[in-house]
Length: 105
Image 1: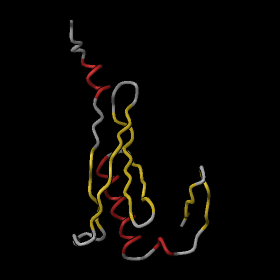
Image 2: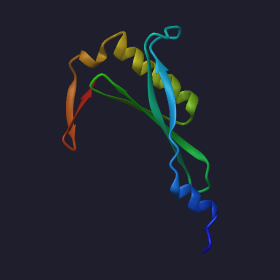
Image 3: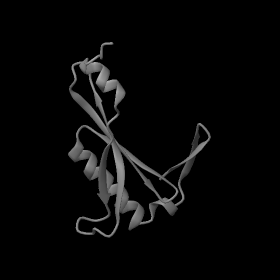
Image 4: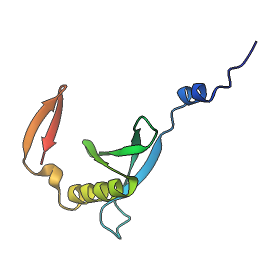
């Protein structure tokens, strides 16, 4: 009996999930939310896109950026808009994708 120790087979067995935190306001740690990061690489293995998703209230906040720092700034701004300014409750356009209601504010 031989055990396959190939590097690529180990990558297929495990899925690593990165967690991150976004907050409302620069100094306000009372409104913090956790989410997941997904990284996308090109054919050469270089990172080309990072996306993040946070579950909030009755839906999700999703954003993408070219790197992790830019993604963090975008998600902090979106959390601030939702928590402090209540953008989730403003009227906007509604679109349905795969039977899921999306509010476009």
